[in-house]
Amino acid sequence: GENVEQHPSTLSVQEGDSAVIKCTYSDSASNYFPWYKQELGKRPQLIIDIRSNVGEKKDQRIAVTLNKTAKHFSLHITETQPEDSAVYFCAASGTSGTYKYIFGTGTRLKVLA
Amino acid sequence: GAVVSQHPSRVICKSGTSVKIECRSLDFQATTMFWYRQFPKQSLMLMATSNEGSKATYEQGVEKDKFLINHASLTLSTLTVTSAHPEDSSFYICSAAVSPSSNQPQHFGDGTRLSIL
Image (tube, rainbow over all chains, first blue to last red; front, top):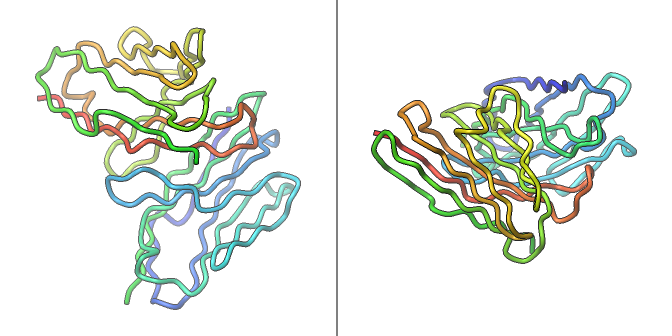
């Protein structure tokens, strides 16, 4: 089955710096890759997603890149702010005709003011 | 749009009790909903896929007789934790997608924190 690895597990950056979180997946049939932000005790919220027919997508300070050949995708946050501090999860979907998500292990991002 | 409501938000009960959690899609119909479990500082682990009008599909290692899922309508799925024990204490979250397609985002409920004494 699908396996999603996520790195790093924790990341601390200074306010204003960039943060990059990387994920790799194992199943080449996966075709949808969302990123979720989860604050403590709250629901995961979709922040950006990318489909397999696209290599890059950007939404203001957030961007995601996808390399299908290497089977990895990355989240880029520029000009980080303290409110970006949270746990970020990547996921892969679309394998074997299903649309269930397989989540990465999560990255705890801390933006230092 | 695409709001998912989950109730209750918090449950504390004695060992041996059965607990029912509801997941509702408020402004869309969801033929498929998903149930996840999340332990502290860990990722979301898919427990089962809930299909309207048919049996749920459980992930490997999840006991279907312990975690009963019912998806009787296009807007409601329920998860019942039967004869709960302390090791069942966790954060349970449901999600639903607007369209039954692999390329659509899932929208999550607020989660239910279950504590078994």
